[in-house]
Image 1 (cartoon, rainbow, N blue to C red):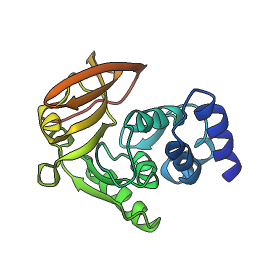
Image 2 (cartoon, one colour):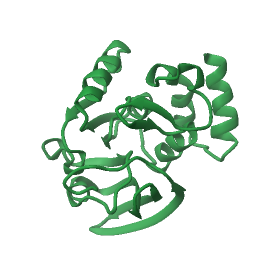
Image 3 (cartoon, rainbow, N blue to C red):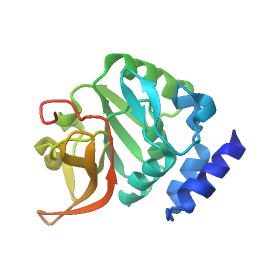
Length: 208
């Protein structure tokens, strides 16, 4: 599987413009096939099912979102939508402390068990409505949302540190979104669209 990871990084990550050394090293390190239902297709260039109506993004999107965070080792990151745990594992391999929220009970327990089995100890999970964040652990220097919503949930902006960066798929129509990077700096909010994407719905009080 190491050969598959090397091919994935060469053909899907570097070839598409990802340059962050920490992201590339993490994508080489984390065994993606352990986080999906179809292990034989784990390193191909498309999303895969992880059960319960959820999917895992193709490798390039995982790498792109990770790079857009511009995160440095030791930072605290809030992830909304743990899913199978792959994105969280990549962030953890980058040396970040990850606080991750999952709303689907079955996924939460299965993923928590998997991360424990893989000895990934710098991911702290919570079973809850992700649009509310984790106020008791805020603020977070970085926030990543792995589901698409109509707008940025106000609690997440409140929990984003200043300065801080948030990355989220956003759009007024379901499954048609722009990957948006939000920068908070000295109390001001700056938004920029980075890519057209398709994500599962962000469900919750401030989602769909």
